Image 1 (cartoon, rainbow, N blue to C red):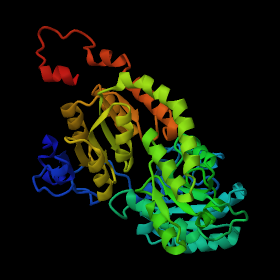
Image 2 (image 1 turned 90 degrees about the vertical axis):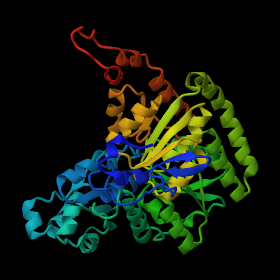
Image 3 (image 1 turned 90 degrees about the horizontal axis):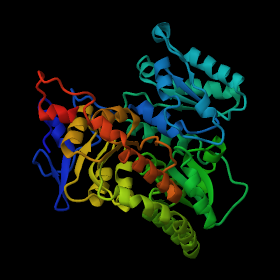
Image 4 (image 1 turned 60 degrees about the vertical axis):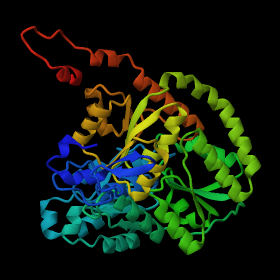
Length: 474
């Protein structure tokens, strides 16, 4: 697919491919695989986030019992505050935001003393917090503030862990670098610093789930019902003390394989802990995840019992949605792995993905999209708004699944939309979550509002000539 909007930036065509004959055919004719995880092309109105966003917003932010301190301007802190509903038993991390509030004078004279004072003041105000996470930003990195040294001084002053993340926004090519930094920093500073009091034969960590709209409540009871004990969640609904004993689990169960495989690899290297890659969305994938973990521990019979019990409850509800969704075509645009995680899930509902895109996916993400998608599926890396509009107008999908910032663009074009980033309602994971997902999709696609949106709001005056294309766009 050659995008008209990219005529002035032909470099973008290297980021577009179509699956043909089971292979990837890049749209620029080179035949090579889709280009990804590279610097944004100048002139491209990218939708990517920065390294700080990936570290603060995704990996570190869900930790529920620490003071989440941004060292930088107020805008950076406000951007990261509460925009992802990574819920927890204690909503302290969602209720407050902390920032050193760097202004012009601090940029000129330095902000290290101000940061130290902010950490001590925040700890005095919230003495029950178990520690402080400090996130660096572009501004403080550029002026040379030594946040790591300040963190050491602050830790001595308050007697709690103060962890400094070198996640200034300009590092890397997208928020993906922030995931990496968050993983490495937490592993280095916290993991292995405490021991479990109680042992259990079947201990696991859930790695790469951030408890969006309480996702964990849909699948954690399933692992527990088959006999597993969950030590640590990385990092949805997790505490600092749980992160410290993460190394004691006998198996890491990795859900988001873009943002969290790093810590699973590091734990395997240092502690010998094996890990398995799973998908915790959809009936088939959730069943496969339980079977994989069951096979590792010799709990196959227990896994099958749980699967049989849950499917008996869920399948009739899913079957009720299928006639209303059968044959519908979907464009999925997510940050990373959900673009390929959800291909099988949507197929279970009788739907077909006709286009798949990610904001910060790497080559292995696109390889998984290629493996799961049907022939003819369009793949595009880091699409911008003009490209998204062109896809929606050209392919005319019945549903667009993306993040909230694309919702209004989709609605203006009359395309039903579901928020796959932070969910419309949720949770969407596990067996019961798929029912919620199917319900939200059905509500979006089959809403009667689209008949009104696509119709003319008022008669067109006879004296005004409107082309068929303009009518369709309206």
